Image 1 (cartoon, rainbow, N blue to C red):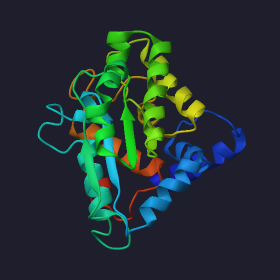
Image 2: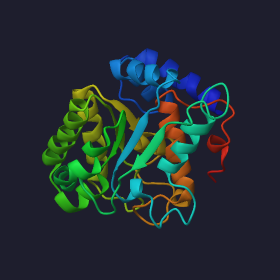
Image 3: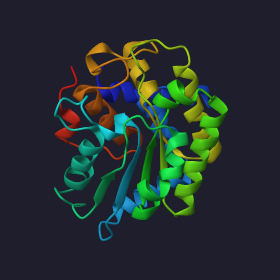
Length: 254
């Protein structure tokens, strides 16, 4: 099934089920499109006279160290997409800045005391938030995870920036609590009326299970360069910011 058919099918399914949980690229995009932040985000992007500072915060997956095997991580791919490929001509948003303060091994709980260094000093316009993999292993407290994630969203909003919550990619180890943490991110996104990028749902749609595709992973927890390409594609499409004829979005993922 090609992407156009996939999107059309998903939209039809969404119309039938009304408030069903987003489970595809098109479903998440339709959910996001109803939010005020979606309109605000697209208004910022359409205003090519004013540069945007995009900030990524998260753990080792956002950090992108080691497991991409020397290839670009998904924040780096996003920089190529938004600064060079987006819009009616190349480089339309070339003055934008994309920063990445992801730290290997980090949790939402551990991020909060470091937020002044990793978040607030930069005065971002849009903040991509990706935690959960380590929270499930280290903190092991689902309610605290949701509380801390909400606190991060609150900090971003206090800065007048747009928060974008990301559901982490699945793992290959089949840990029973992974879907719970994925659902926790969705719950916080709904509660806070945040934009959502649901990597886990799209990967499940492709693989048919809660475990990750082996060829997208460098080990049990970390996506490889192919997985990061899929993450960048999911981010762009679920936020409605996928450029037509993007070379980055056409990179091989198999």
